Image (cartoon, rainbow, N blue to C red; front, side, top):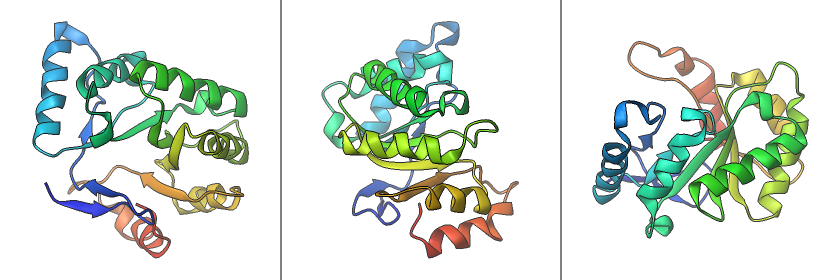
Length: 189
């Protein structure tokens, strides 16, 4: 599998990752979901993305089963919901995710999308604390536009945004005009 440096970090990550949005435990498919994730790992798809909201945490539990005995080879990403974006709730949400994932750390922790009620600075302070405690290696955001991304960056004291995970496909290419150039200029994956 082709790997690429993940933004400004020195970490090499597979260019194709495995998302778990639809792995929610419906229709008795848990075993197949775990098998699919393991096959992906066998094929070099070592970047696994999940979130506390996917199946109300069930996707994280399935990822835990899939990566048992293989944690060191996985670049593991999870996301906190905007409704949990306050300082204390972000800390608790991350610890719940770690417990469900049966790991001591996340490689990347993202705010799933901007909160309409909680200042981004409050969330970023919690993210920095998670890094300082060794629970998270890198922090980032998801579904942020350029202005929201700048606000998140400006609120950080000791860390940098490593990633802005956004929707992008042949039918949705709007990020090519401003967001992708901004991220490339600032080393944001």
